[in-house]
Image (cartoon, rainbow, N blue to C red):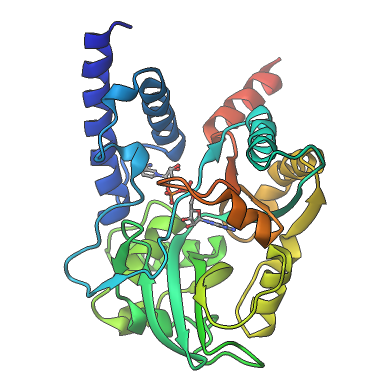
Length: 332
Ligand code: NAD
């Protein structure tokens, strides 16, 4: 591809991705599948790697989410809420491990924590003096939508933290809807002549962004917490201990499926197991999130513009592709 062709394709991809971001993040009405979106995004990343002069601050590869809706009070995140880099197969997961070691200049194995990648909506909960004070969406990573009242209606979000929780704690988590609850909810909507939601993620996003919190209160939302922003006091030395700590303070953490492994090969094995387990889970997941466990190493690795260097989301192959392969196998 020559320079002029690259420039034209770059412009086209940026416009397309901006449009899909708006449909997905702002209107909760995506027109293409996540796998199709990921393919376009990857194409843009590769194009920008080959032609770095095309990158502008407005490029979707440097951005998180989309601007918050004006109907909600803007909430500035004390620490940015970033996205995650994607690995689309096992080889890319191993590349991630190699990158981590190269950056840290170390040869010995790295310990990783693996968490399910819940397909929902990222939120931040700010607890001051252990009381839920502010709740917001991720928005564009720097500023989110203030949805405190709506988040207060979710039974699995504690209004007050228990035990020796610190006086300031910002918790990050994913709000989602169980598959069974989603089916019932959509069925009820259909019976009432209302528009049904395409998937549980869109239903969760739409339910959180209600101007009347009594509407949110009637939606079957749940949360899994997976990280923190700012906090006061001391922290444990590892991410898996931090998760246990959050759980002890009364926050809902998906400890049943969280695993800690030495080195990347057992992570790859867990990712394989998860693909079989996926359809037996009560909620939708779209992959595995792999994080460097030691918090000191996380700090050393730091962040890039859009994502931390110490974590990666290993995404499942699209369901359609799996179905086609199964069909072919059945036909044979
Ligand atoms: P992402 O979904 O790939 O990964 C980051 C997010 O994962 C975090 O913000 C958090 O919300 C979530 N997450 C879930 N479990 C987590 C855990 N245990 N630890 C940490 N984070 C966890 O990135 P994104 O920026 O939210 O969205 C990009 C993705 O959204 C794309 O890859 C695509 O799949 C989808 N998308 C689709 C369309 C479309 O039109 N279909 C448009 C835009 C984005």
